[in-house]
Amino acid sequence: MDILTIIRRKAETQPDRLAFARLEGGESVTYQQLIERVDSTVQWLTERGCRPGERCGLMLADGADFLGSALGILGAGLCLVPIGTFLPEKDKDFVIKAAGVHWLLRENYRLFRMPFAGPVDDRNDEEFRACKPAYLRFTSGTTGLRKGILLGHRTILDRLDSANARLRITSEDKIWFALPMADHFVVSILLYLSRGATVLAVSTHANRRQIAYHQRPTVIYGSPDFYDGLIRSDIEALDSVRLAISTAAPLPEQVAERFMRRFGKSLNPALGIIEVGLLTLNSRPDKLGSVGLAMPAYAITLVGANGKPIKADEIGELHVNGPGLLDAYLAPWRPVRRLLGRYGYPTGDFARIDPDGYLFLAGRDKSRLQIDGIQFFCEEVETVINTLPGIEESRVFFDSNSQTLSAEVVGSPGPTDRLSELLLQKIDPRKVPRRFHVVECLPRTPNGKLRRT
Image (tube, rainbow, N blue to C red):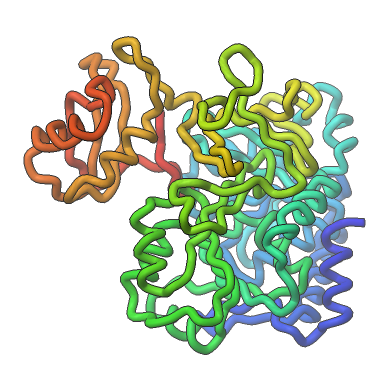
């Protein structure tokens, strides 16, 4: 069984149901039309010499063409390598080379043969093909070079089943999807289509009211910035929504609180890890700051510096075990069997679990600092800075030139000396940045994540 077979069966039972709609330009396709596009793409790729087991990059803007092409690549037995059109050229080139892409499909059905594609493992792609490869995506590179994560067909199905145990997506759902398809494809787009749901996309503020009131979405999937925009919009109610998922970045508590006051609904933060899938979902408004409980299929363990599990409310590295873990890293190639430890996959995220089992992220391993005998994460200081008057967002870092803890802040905070005074009332003095720099924006990856390097 593979994902396309499941979507094809949905199309057989509900051919006229809308699979995808974008209000701009009136673009829409039913499930039957989507499968027709997929079959046409499969034939087109095969006629041009594409062979099962090869890697095909896809560089298309979000929309029905992206969906038909992505599923067609899978249907032709190729491994899909989505490449965001928003990436800088150097990042696109990196992905194409690191993934050993054999083919590149671009807009207007332009297909390029990449003559110098090399194997991604040490055995001329033998190990790669043994994974029954389906999907290859690269990390955002927030703390260094991008890493390639390979998922096989079985892995994808396991991830979808694990996520839907909590999300419960059905053919009755309409998903307001507000993130890039190239980055959020497996436990989002593929999940929705495999369950027969309708994906609704909109990129302009003017059409938000039409989606909210006429399309009546049941699920929203977006970033904290997207929800902040909804709160500030002229939409009065989201009566049809049963689940609003916030992902891609930490959810500020004030955004969650304002969303509840504005719409009377919980904003549910979720933790998605590209190597794992959708790991957690928080459905309790009283657990502000938590990314929630682990999906039932996953076992999570927090491991201390001694390599042993820690007690509740202590901070340790998050390890994950369960179905749907990545099949391999590449660039360089490392199969999953070489990545797992005693407690599963070590994520590099540090967190604590409260007595109720709710997970609270502390920070990434590479954002952990040790200054004047105290160890802490940049993220925990940023969380406090972001609550200060006039601050929109912040980035804490150790300035190697001045050898001091520093911070960049966006907003209109007034004299920066005042920031230090306010922070001294809230956190350990050793965690207070010595220098503040007011900037127009913070450095981010092309995916929108805060750049730490």
